[in-house]
Length: 492
Image (tube, rainbow, N blue to C red):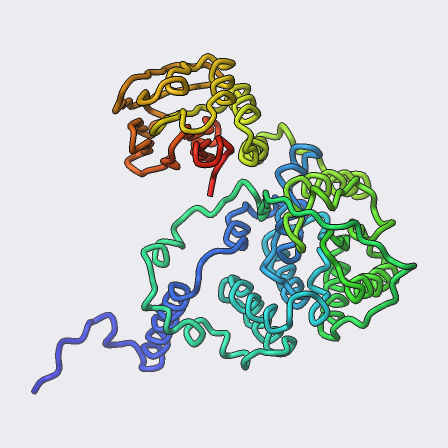
């Protein structure tokens, strides 16, 4: 049987060239396949979306850094750019290789290291927990020598790690093909620019006692590989002629962890690295309140982040001559990002308010908010006197709160009532929010609000409120002031 036709373009190529061409094509296909198989997400995708040589401060660290450092706020207050290049439970060897990656694309004026990664083997997370989260979330660096070096470092430094070659996505995630979604194939074509710049605000509040130390904590030995990579990071920043700043954020810290930070502070002092300790009693005083500024035992909430970011931004601006780029047309996107982040922060108080009178005060006094209000069932089944007073104060028809069998639909925009209808029901109304189709329905057994066909209402007996932010162009909350809860706010 004769051979098939051979292209004139390839017939004359030497076998070695054809083999090399085939190998390159195969390698490209393998690289594409492994990136498809790898889990998606993490802040590093947003970092690569930032234009080169536009970031003034690189923040390194764990979820503690993600919760504590707000670059958009720092821009708003001081006018310099920053990015939080974090990964969950980021140990020091990851911080170092993330810094190497950052220097490939950016020429920062300062690098800030959040120090939780030095507590490997000493903190509330076991080494196995740190290894597991680090394995899953730290290898989002694109294929490169640095990613290979990070895999080697993880294999060498972690207490429970496979050989470095097991970090190859094709080996590590080869069974993930069963769970692939469309996003795995389109991820590379999406825009990953974020307004948060690696900041992840936490909005819960958990109270903890103010830490009390009996005298100065004694130094605790640092996990050897963590200390090794602290020295390596100091040397890297010195080589790049970029100052390094060491920061400890507040959390419920053990005596041993205080000792780790004390040893780290001595190493930093010996190497000319300033330390900003927001955690140790007698450390940097920013008015941090352990009763209101922690989201949980390990992370600050938005109130704590605001205090840390304000102080840290002022420190960096004062000591390192940070440029004020506000108003620079080349950085207009930062003005918009800061505006969006600030707007989101303004909504936090509303989202955590469960008292109906205070909730409506915040809602009706914000010109950038719109809301739809629906009643369901018999609104007199619980004492309606308090919600009736709220309705009267803001010009809403109180009939559903006075008579059984009466329903109500209301639309407010910028603090003004723009539509209301009450009656036996069912009642229906449609409107548009920034191009989104909104449909309201109020009935005895159903209080429905859909946005673009998707149900958004809490749909509970009493008063249901759906709030839309016109600046952010999204629904920010669905809350019920239900007769089942004596008209206390319900969002679960």
